[in-house]
Length: 123
Length: 187
Image (tube, rainbow over all chains, first blue to last red; front, top):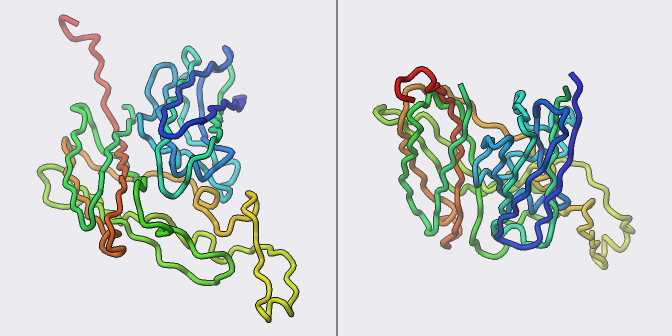
């Protein structure tokens, strides 16, 4: 089983706003094995972020699911960092992310980037 | 069988506030397989949740936000209880750190304080976002439950003597029996 990792970015430019983006996977990808969220400013993603994730129009994580639950720190081995999704069929290959930034007194807003990494299984 | 997560936000706005809530599970829920929690701080006293500075060599007490309890309908016992902490303040205790050169004479005389810029490589504390382990739900196996009765009581407001506003996020993982409509008449 050959796997490939893809990265998609969502720039977060304003506080307390939802940023929706759809990403297309390659046609030769049959399923999604794992996903991972990171950021250029980890603390903002950890304290302020939540998201809804849909793959092939199927809701994987509902609205308000906190990003910190899909983050892995440097203490986690690189082989274990991805959230295990079993083998979620890629279907039409569309991944839709509604990322929501919410105020938290522990992390003051500055523009940041949210990156979604997807571990995919090739045909 | 299909896994799904249900989200319940519990808002706390006053000290010692108690919050009773209900979570209705979908009709085709087979069992509850796990629970995880999160926290969003909306308003707090200045520097209330700031960790001690590096090099203090102290272990800090974690801030207990409150206690959460969950009960299945029709059953007397609590099936899940958890103390919600703001974060693990001692997550980096015992970590090796590299400090800039500090001449002993000046340090002894207290003439100079070292300023370590927060440049991304020298946090003045170890944050959970870099040092936390992989987050997974607490596994459960609760069958035959249709409604969850929940209770949360604030503690941090009592400690601070201040109305701390925050939301506790409750994530309930369930397993659903996906019943196909293909063989039903009239569908």
